[in-house]
Image 1 (tube, rainbow, N blue to C red):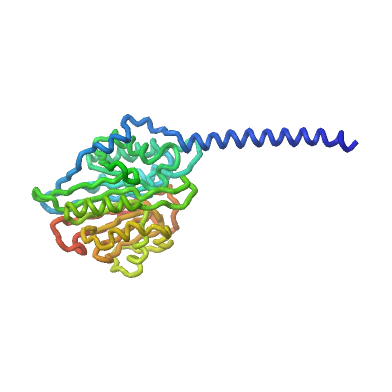
Image 2 (cartoon, rainbow, N blue to C red):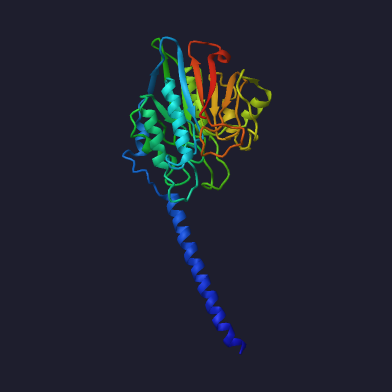
Length: 349
C-alpha cells in the first residue's frame, strides 16, 4: 500500500520539477541573451575608434572654454515620465546657455534591467539628438552601468559614432573603451587639454565588485599631459580614493553645495590612478560622478577634485538631491589653477 501511494506523489514532484527547470532554463536563457546581445544597430564599428584623428577645439577671444557635464541620468527608454523630465530639463539648459563641449560623464542609461520596455539605445538617441540640435561637440565617459546589458560600452560608442559632433578616441592595448585627449587652442597655440577616460565597470558584469582605472590607462594620461605640458582637465565616471581626502582636507570651492552621503573612497583598491598621477602638476581638475547623492568641489594637492550628483530623475538618490547638470568654465589664459575654473550647478527642476 505504501508503495502504490508513493508513485503518484513522485509523478507530481517530477512534473513540478520539470516545470521549474523549464521556467529557470527559459529565464536563464533570456538573461544570458540580454547580457550578450547588441541592439544598437550601429552603422559604425568600434574598431574605427583607433583611427580617429586628434581633436582640436578653438577657444574664443575671451579665453573662456565652457563645459557642460551631465552624469548619472540612468535613463530607461527616453519616453517614460522620469526620462521625459530629465530630457526636458537638459533641453531647457541647452536652449538658455551656449557651451563649447558637452561631456556625458557616465551611467547615461540604466544598468541591469530585464523589463520589456527597457530601450537603452532609444534613450541615448533622444539625448544625443537634443545635443546635436545645438551643433556642440560632445563626448562620453563610460560609466559602470552603461554596458551591463544589451551591448558593451564599445557598442554604445559605436552607436554614438553616427552623430556628427560626437568625439571619441582610444589606443590599442590599453584597458577601457574610451581614452581621448582633446586639445584646446587659444590665440593659435595649445593652451589646455581635456582628457576623457573609462574608469571601468564591474567584474563579474553587473554583480561583481567595481573595477577601476588600470596602470596602462593612468600611464597613458601621464604621457599625454607630459608631452604637451599644458594644464589638463580630466573626466571619468567613478571617483578615486583621493576624493575622500580632498573632501575632508581640501579647500571647498566657495558657494558650491557639498554633500557626503556615502564615503568617497568606497572602491577600496582604486589607488593606481592616484599613485601614478599624484605629483603630475599638469592635472588641474579631476571631475567625476557615480555616487548620486554625493556632491563636492575642493582644491587639494594643487588641483580641483569635483564630483557632481545625479543629473537624472530615473536615478536613485536621497530626497535632498534635485537632479542637476554642472557648468565648468575654464579660463585657459589663467596660469593659476585655483582661479582658472568657475563651477556652477543648474537644477533641472
